[in-house]
Length: 345
Image (tube, rainbow, N blue to C red; front, side, top):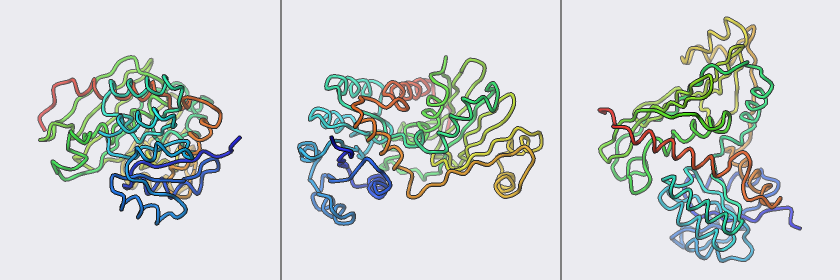
């Protein structure tokens, strides 16, 4: 019985490069191959990382008998086709976020995985970071008391370019699919499915959302989430409870530091999103404030690789921290917000 999953990567872009670099930190995974539409790009990629093979097209990658799983790192609009092709050959799949560009496509992918009893997971790497594991522990321990409010923002300014992956609907563009998926997925991971969803969005000239505000209603509290290409946000995730406040420091999608405050002055400090307040919180001891540092080598993708690999070796069809039902729900939330009439942009 093997103790490592043999992986191939479909795609040679930025995520694929970061992923390939992080395999060296994973215990139960090895990278053996990569594919690209261009044989030259595949060979160049393979040469940079050494000891892996390059294939032209995912079809050749999926047909290889010594590959157990494929990481689909292609553009959003190609996720469904490439993932279902890989599943049809019996390969486990880890699909770069978003799982697909619609909930209907996500259900199609989930059905394909179920039909073959084959492992499939969305690569929402944030949920597997050590800092987020610590957040789950603190919530389970009741450190914050009953949750009263959640707020998060993830925004990076992008100049409008109709042909870019951020704004082109044919490429699966839009701020919610690119950025909003992170706070939505983290809420689902920490708090489960909301009772109701509301929100607003602004329309880019190409029709995709350039920014959005999303409201998830839970029993006893609301989660107010924001995302956008129209600004640079504070990019923190804040959980306010009756006894304390927890802040996942910026950028929360690559969480490596938490602040937990159960004291008056420190708790008031965390209520501000300004750089000065957090500079003080990072460096000055404050009564009632606890810092949790969870720094890691590499890009941080090794944790999702390791989690998926362990689940595959255990014979699972899903990972309990990232079931396909949660990925489908995240897309349904985005679609609910998008169904509202857009605000003037």
